[in-house]
Image (tube, rainbow, N blue to C red):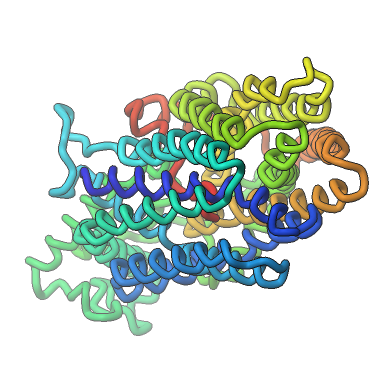
Length: 544
């Protein structure tokens, strides 16, 4: 697993040398804060969909190595060209192209790392309990690279009197170093896992056909109608046994969260043997209470519906809409902070060394919170964690708004950066868990993507864009002051709406609480290293 550790180390080290300092570079190239905010607003809308499409192509055609190497190499070349761009249209075009091309890199490597860390993988060292090496132990090296080299990049830029060339040079050198492990990533476990997922999908389809009494509608009960002939009929007992073994292995390899919902999501898929047909059991009669308090969204069987219809079920759920509104408000604060904090520190006389050190502090804080996230969620519950995140955002934004009046030194920002552990680490952990709890069956990954789209797409983009306008008109302190009130009002409104929905039965509070308790118990039983890193998997910091 040394290859994966080195990839994460060099990849995030290279990103940290350049990405956080781009707003400074843009302003020194002649762009005003409004332009900086516009770039910040548009970047997520390019990176998120392109990442999904390109990684999907890699999965479908099993060309992960080709897409990863080509996209990463091209993105480095394009991003380095920012150093010679001097106008807003040119800089915007180059940045968006670089983000689009680079978008699948971290997604693909994350998938390979998770597959390689599976207990059944020959690449994964096992401990005394037979568990595979935790993904978090690989991903942790990315945090080490980010926190270390962002500080080094800041020192180098200060040494050369703010010259952006130092940041581009460090980025280029470390990006070249990243190519070495890129070419040696083991893809076998990922390809095997994708094949098993296909088998599992076909097996589930076969069971659904049996339950629906449609054995003669083109799909044999034994699964012989499955595409590509991967699942054969029962005339070959060896292949039938192999199928059961594959699905059994898959169930062991799934995440603890999926184990928690095993009784929910595997309805109709628990028995793969076609030897005995089950007589359909009539559903119990619905009571008035059942109609007024429908089961949680992820417990609903969404059969015979296409992807768009399933997505409509998700987006029509009051509980889901409330959650997505909540994280959009938080994303507004994230976009404001990440786009304009460094410009504000420069206005206060802060050096690039200080800016790099703030990233080191945030990295330490978020790693600590990620490690203990399951304990915090178990103690507070997911909704309680989200309220704590709102409070942390308000304290952080309020501190920035009054920073100029603190002892007249920008170095007082460092203690404030410790709150990043809550505003990113806990927000991400609780948001990921909440997304899993509200997702309909079959839309688990899509719900996670929608969550990321709202917080790092819609919310982040609005925060960056509005902060740019405010910075131009009223200065940096007004940026954080206005963001403070946006978050405060958003917190009050979402809390009030949530209370109203629960009071009138639109959200089943008892069911939601029991699901959160079930999630927490499974998380608490997981290993410490896996616990922190598993929730960190999706966000490519600074590259998205």
